[in-house]
Every structure is written in structure tokens, then in C-alpha cells.
Length: 324
Image (cartoon, rainbow, N blue to C red; front, side):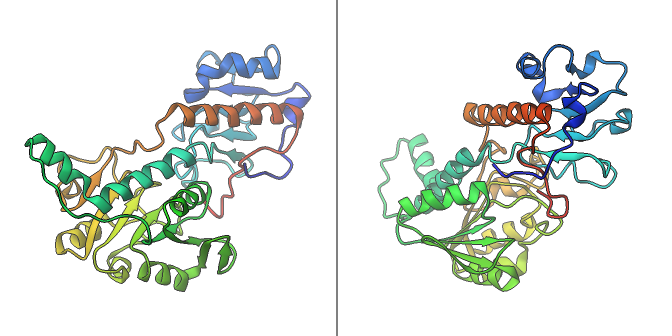
């Protein structure tokens, strides 16, 4: 887990503040109260006086934070925090932490599944099965293919390990640092690094968070740089890839396929051309919906509650400038 600077936990440590528990964290109220001690954590919906609440866990970005004049910490039970970082949502003095890393394993597994399905055109077998048609054919494999990963965080690194086990050549684009290597993974950085990754990837997987810097970063110009017949997979957030440009590239045959789990508008409207685009596999932002994701998120939440109680640095503090 990423660390944080010294957290504002003193308010909780001296007994002056309360932790408000809401939304996705409500089921863990008893476990939180075991950590904080009697009366230090309360269910938000049962609290009419919110003036003493210094920490809020499990709430949604739609929560009116003006109700909490003493608020100093918000914990998101989701890994993605783009909703919290919209202008006017989070006061400047409030620290934000997240469940970053909780879904890295299933997200990487889902990306690998989509890559395998695309390389073999697995939907064609499903259609043949529905027809009871014994249709044997030559298909692709991942071994030797070049994988490009946009976003070398928790999910990107886990996917890289899985892809190397499948004998793929792996490169990744990261926001910080410079070009180089992480073991067998070639690292790229900056605009030229992105262009190089696009030009040299048979499979391109987007694992980056949605930020001001990543929104719309893959459009028609970038897709045109990809090799003829390459495949594009999105497992992190919609809005990073221009879906109109993606559909156009699938229809023209420039892209050989796409696996999309995260969409610009969710639920994906029935009228979206992505549903019927040639070579597209659509899943309903379902990649990380596993018991393991929930359990890892719960562990991060409870650890941070304990750290807040002790006045210790919190896990997964969000860098507002970076957007994650």
C-alpha cells in the first residue's frame, strides 16, 4: 500500500472527534467500533449533530460535506476517486484516502481473460456452440505478442507479471520517472513514450486512473498509431479512450478487436454502437466485483481506522494534483 505523510489523527487520538460511518462501510461498523472504542464511531444516518465528526468513511462524493465543519479525513471504499476530486466536492483541509490496490488482482485477471478471448476470437466458438457447430479453425496465441500497458500502478504491475508468465513481451507507460526497465518490463514515459508504446503493441491495455491528464488521452490520432489488427482493452475507467474513435477503428478493420469493461457512460446505453461493433467484447464494469476485492478493501479501511485512532500515517493518501 502507498503510504502517506503524518495524518491528522490527533483529533481522534485525544477523543475529541468522531468517525462517521456510511455507505459501503456501514456493514463494518461493529469492527470499526472495536478498533476505536465505545462511542468513537457512529452510523452517519443515526447522527443528527455532525459538528464533532472529524472523519468520514464509506460516504459517496454526493455527500454534502458542508455538514461537517470539523472534517479532516475522508476514506473512499472505492479505488477510483475521480468523483471526489471534482471541483467543490472536497474541502482543501480534508485528507482523502482510498481502497487503491483492492481490485488489482481481478482487474489483471480480467484483462488477461479479454486478451485470451480476443487472440482466439472466443465469441466465435460461443456462437458455434449455440448452433451445435463443430467449427475448428486456426487462431492466435499470446506467446510472443507485444503487450503495452498504460498505467503502471497496482493493476498494471500485476498484469505485467501475468503476461510475462504467458511469454509475452511487456512494456508499460508510467506517469512518474523516466524510461528504463523494471525487470523484464520496458518502461516508457511522456508523450513520446506513449507514441512508442502505441506503435509497438499488439495488445494495448488501459489500467490508468481517470484524471485530468488521462481523460481522452487515447483518441483517433493515437489509435491510428497502433499496428493493423492490434487489440485494445480497457479495465480501469471510461473516458480515457474515445469510444467513437474506437468503434470507427473496429468498423474499418484497423483494430482487430477490443475488450471494454469500463465505459464513458455507465450503464452502457442499449443504443451504444459498442455493443455491436465488430470484434468488441463488452463487460459491465464487472472485472473487480469479487469477494477478494471486498475483503482487501475492508482490510485497508480497518487498518486506516486504526492508524487514524493512533495518529499514525494513513495508507493510500490521494495526491490531488496527480488525481489518484
